[in-house]
Figure 1 (cartoon, one colour):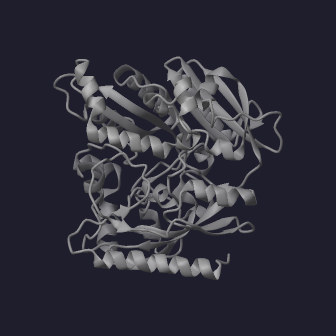
Figure 2 (cartoon, rainbow, N blue to C red):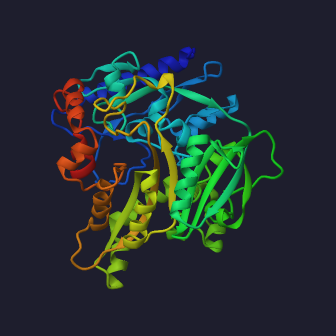
Figure 3 (cartoon, rainbow, N blue to C red):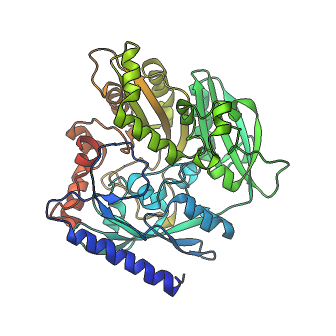
Length: 465
């Protein structure tokens, strides 16, 4: 893989600038990235930050080796735009366009190829990491492998990935979809387990798999197969709304590009709360603003001005609690978790995405019970999990804590060998947090790669702020 001279020079200049910026921050000053976009839902404010300008490009794509060299702040929107012309895609493309590659690696990401390709960090071959000491360390599966293994779920508290080399996978031009309805969580869980194990359904190949729960007795598993031709193509970037089509049709066809971004136009279904799905509003709302990053900025504005809280209080509630979460539960515990969720939380729709840790010679050293392959987000390599995503507000009753529902979800997950992602509200006590997210290993890595504690602590960053 060859990087052009001009591109290499520009990359080195950007690396030198961010390294210099870290050295110039006053001792004790908080270190965080000043990014153009964010998909975190921990709105804790704070000014300044470490500029990362010039670290948002695809450096090169090697079609023969099926790899790409990518700067850490590159969005998946730009990454996919660079790889698709070569008939390639990242092994896992998270659902939203402005998620960055570095963010998906250190903060986790998931999508409908995760039942066969795991999570985005599992396709990283090597990375250049800026640590808290100001060093830039190259980590790979045979070079500082402990740092590579510790990056997932570290949220930048061990270092910032400035460049990553990732594996790519071949694609076909179109995706044929089947929306298969099930009447219970038990049937859905069985189907997800079967597809993950066989990568087939009803004798046909499955390349993509996710699901949508509209109610306790209305579930859909969506199965995608890459194909070379399509009898027609649907478009959900205009008046059509993708998630509604799941209930309306048994099959569908999209280009591979539109399939990868099918959820972004309406932020799954969350644009509904902003009125964007009303036919009149939709016609007047410019298509260039029908994007997840635009909607997130509107949510951030609402959090600052408190409009949703004021409306809830006027209706008699004690307020509303944002419940923006993705959790993983073993597939056999999915019915139990959904029963609890429908009964106590009541948000719908709910997204499902099966996940299994990737099995490949290139995915690193063998995992043992005392040595998880990815220690800060340990998964059983022999288990199939289901990511359950739910993103809305829930009313609070008088006397309930502001994080009442989120904490209840955490408590239930503890009984089901489950985890949750840390991009949003977390309320775990320190002992629970350490047990779930590799606390002892994290402290060893922190002492090794950030001995002066220049970067924030993971628990402080994700829980206490």
